[in-house]
Length: 98
Image (cartoon, rainbow, N blue to C red; front, top):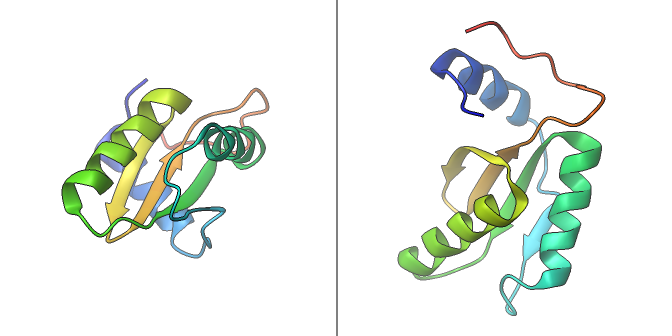
């Protein structure tokens, strides 16, 4: 699934007031962290994850791994904050038409 620019803008607006649900610490991306992200995506559909990595390449690799492992869509990355979207069974968020 891919999002149009209009849909991404809509999700960015919704995510603006959100606080990070998952914080990646010094141990980086572990199975437990991936499980927490998966649970949060199932419940909320749209979440923020704080990726604490000082090196930009390490941060980008971590973000790519999260997106790949969770099957979520990367809405945006600002600094260390990653916004993810994955529709759930209930479809809590109604996206604007393309």
